[in-house]
Length: 119
Length: 114
Image 1 (cartoon, rainbow over the protein chains, first blue to last red):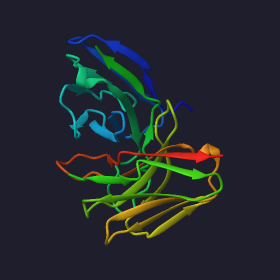
Image 2 (cartoon, rainbow over the protein chains, first blue to last red):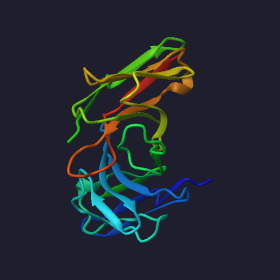
Image 3 (cartoon, each protein chain N blue to C red):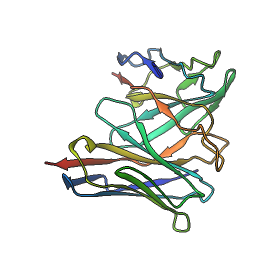
Image 4 (tube, chains in turn cyan, red):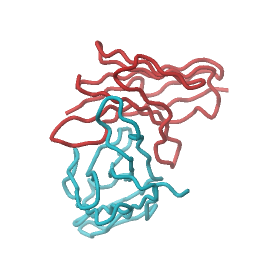
């Protein structure tokens, strides 16, 4: 039972380089999310998706892009890496979204994280 | 958008004592409040959640209370054990610009002293 799997676990990038953080889930969840976590801070939502083919911006989308071609995969792309993007990135998924009183199935499951350093 | 404040940032308690972590939220439309535990080098893991139509929920040594009027919710851990040492995050549903997902507090580092 893999859950949410992220790769790579660690990466060092040079300023201006590009890379893609991979995320896949095997729980047939509709919703997927990308968060970043900075030291001493909570998690900030970067992008989310409510299903294949649909993506939306979260709180801090600048400098990132996402795609959702399948239910299982939700890659996060950094086009021109900047030092401000040094962070820990978490992919997450849930069967339903988080809104709605009385709705079930909206537990969000997180991956193990990807540590990214931009130098 | 939603704003979630969490206190304290660090909490040290003796093993066997109780620990309480408090959060406040700003958006009165928020209706889902989970708590996550994050161990070193791991992703956050849901430990308990509560919806706005419930005032209290318990699961063994863990309980969460919600005061909608005051926009407060709290995590209570009784009979603390060494394995409870971790960072705990509260969260609330995010309302703003059509975005879904959660707004998180900044976390509480809980230290259980032997």
